[in-house]
Image 1 (tube, one colour):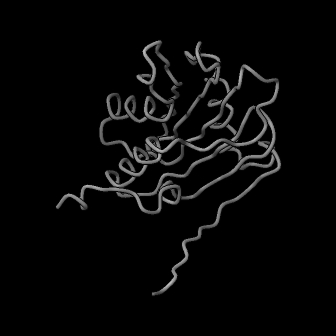
Image 2 (cartoon, one colour):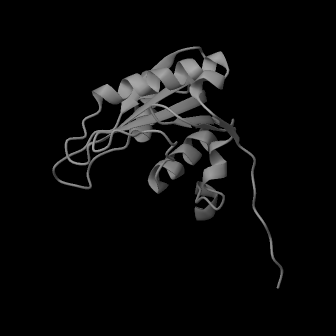
Length: 162
């Protein structure tokens, strides 16, 4: 038997004010997008904003449905919109924020759910370049991850089906 270790580095900023300007701008767009989320059941509004390699910025929000769990997370809405409007465009960075409407506090970063991690990994594989993630609440600490694949180290891929 042998033991192996998986680890990766990420950055933690005390607040969005400490971020490089491009990340701060993208996170602000994700925060603003939370106002457009359709989250009447969970009251957990998520906004995502992507900076594409061509300089375009696209935003998206989570969309819930009374027939749970058929809602769709902001990350997957964003990936779908980008594929539809800018087919083949590479995503450079995605910022994700949230507003927990059940609480006055949205301070710590939240991370994509499992299906969104898989979807991010698939997009990253398709575009053959890493996607950076900027994760933060409406205030407080912000986490920057330089490669979305780090969130799913044993991800399933098309190669597994060959």
